[in-house]
Image 1 (cartoon, one colour):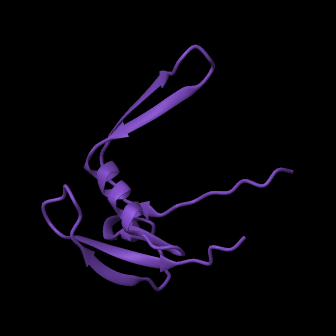
Image 2: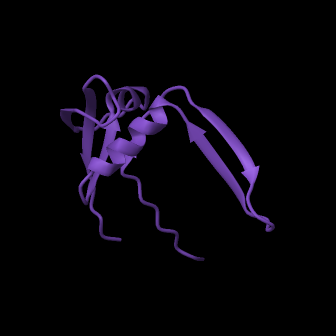
Image 3: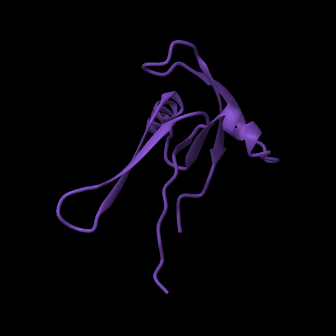
Length: 94
């Protein structure tokens, strides 16, 4: 069985618009999503340090996460109001 590595740095939830399309001449298919929640998730990923997952408060609450997570309020580029987030600490070693 082949191991798969997955990296998650930032998560948000909300409305978005998605599109699926074929790219190039091969069998590759691309998925694109746009919207404020997508932009916020990307910004959260960019501020996450090694061993952190930064999650919007809305996504944290929607998941019903029962774990302790540090609360922060971040000012993100392209977002008019500060964003409340939770920061989970994870062990980055396999």
